[in-house]
Image (cartoon, rainbow, N blue to C red):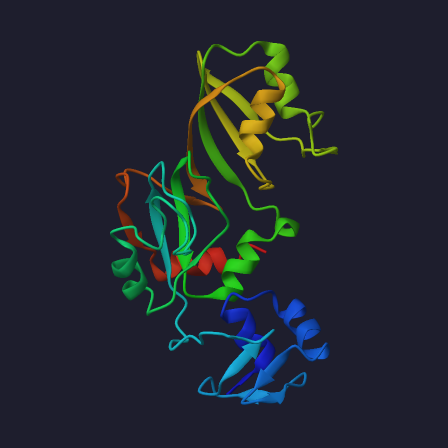
Length: 240
């Protein structure tokens, strides 16, 4: 038996604290009855959030996959999306099976980018790793159209760039060779690196995420995936 707020968190609906707010507002039903904070459920009940039935995990074992997301694949399960997405990617069913039947992307990686994306069956872990308050490190190799100047590198890293009238956080930026940058972020705003580069007149030609929260992509080929070991999953769970 588990508390209903934990069930919602594990299902990837929201954080446990946000789940408590949903319950207090009467938006959660368990077998047709309004749920209450602390209510114990087995997971076999019909649980509705805002009228939508949620899928409850069949496994208590947290599992995580490291996937080398290819370019031109959207991180969405929407069947309405035109083009490649997780809804029609050839490996999705295999990855979902390896995760015990449920798959939650940890954060996002935009369509035009490739590299490491974590997928898990543990909604609570997914919320923890994606939440901006924890400032988890994400490392990227960024190919731009020319060598960046010292002034441009300084501006990229000093936190002076504004996106939607809010300054980005300072971040390490290094030019590995002409036109190839390494950028480490602790936040993950929408298309942040592309917008930062545009602000200093650099055009992103390739964006490759190599590390998320200490998990390295290593030699994992594009479109391939692997299941993280138990120590790797535990390492992720401890990063808060």
